[in-house]
Image (cartoon, rainbow, N blue to C red):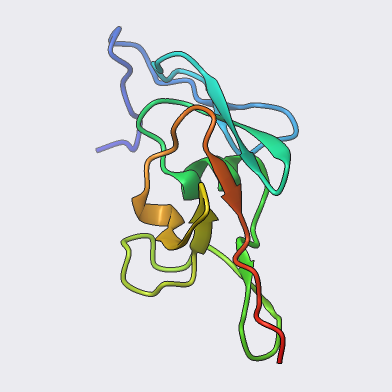
Length: 116
């Protein structure tokens, strides 16, 4: 048995990575592209993608800083259990980026650390 995958058309699937991104460029059907912002940077996303998925595709690995040491934190479990991917979405804190679908125009920010 070979490891070859088949596309919907019956031929071998041809997935190509887009330059300068972690997003698959071809061989995938998507809806219309839209944007949202992360720390005032425009991020491209597609319907059905999570905030974490879109951020990762844009090359963003750190979604917040840890409360104690200020170390970068980001995608870890991918299923909403660990809380490492918490972000602020439209001024609502502690939203899980891995469990929240991206929406056009949403404003996503790193949570703000409280002064000690």
